[in-house]
Image (cartoon, rainbow, N blue to C red; front, top):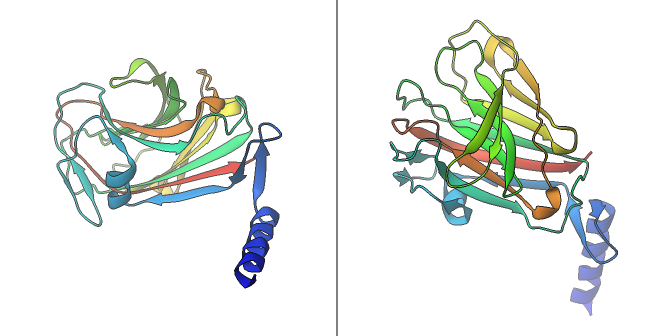
Length: 225
């Protein structure tokens, strides 16, 4: 009886302290979604199209690949039918990179995806006026129909190791924050529409075959707006 009472109290607490997105009378998902993916978590939970070279507690390393604009891995976030197709949500993706390994121009791409369409950002290593560039594409083992959108420019050659991507799919809004020039925000507008009822995942792609990457962590938050 005591266990039952504790369980009921816990259930009431979760319901009182969670934002709820209802898609029908029988389906709902508690928000916010908050998940820190360490290299070990990525190893255990991701679907890999290209296998990593090595993984430790603090770093997952990808060596050169064989496919231009090929997918590295896909992290499932929310299953289908939990959200309305145009649910008003905000997705925040914080990425920790290790810049000790460089191949001259390593530009990983991070997409929020419904399995068919994706929007996100390319993080560029080269000394460019646009370190963080908005991108949209059709998803697959290799990107297709990709378009890019430049955000705010800068004059620094400094390469940060943390980027914060903020996406509001229902409005086609996205922004990328990093520590360049004491904090630079690059807002963009996407044209490719997503259907959130198909489920959500984070898909990570390479740019070129010679590129190498080290990921320290990926933090994903999904909030009701």
